Image (cartoon, rainbow, N blue to C red; front, side, top):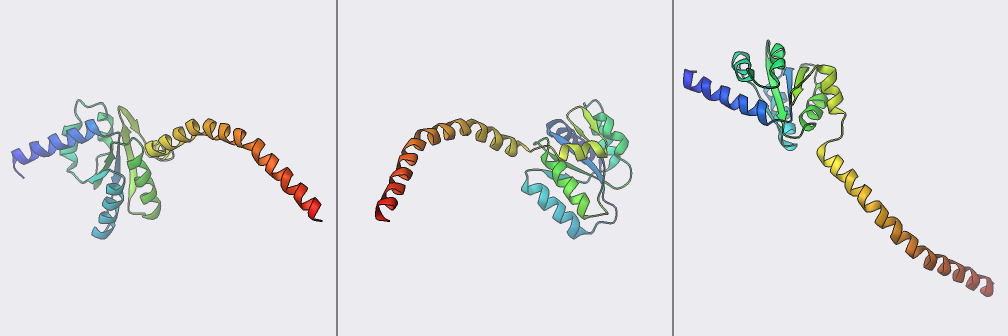
Length: 171
């Protein structure tokens, strides 16, 4: 890899650290190609990505960035999992780590906040952007549903009473 290629990798990594809502650093020593492809596919499904980069280049890319404190995690065979959604990559990484002992979460960053493995796990348990949107929509729609139910209730009660009276007359 010549100097120009290294500079390009550092630029790409810098953009990843700037634009990502969350970056998870994990050790992947001993993982097979199939396992790594499975991890990549899971990340791609949620709009995230996985990147293996030389630790030295990643540390250079971290210089001057808000999440520079994760440079301490970049030792050995590390992989970066990231996504724009502040929760998605952490969820996938945590789930994958539970099913694969060779994938060990070392830490990460969420904006300018460094995360230890417990912090990544805590972020993974937070609701994702889509889940938050769904709960907000449900909260907004609930009053309208209650009003519709209240308006329809008297008619439903009258229909029930008439049915009961018909059954009594028939008996």
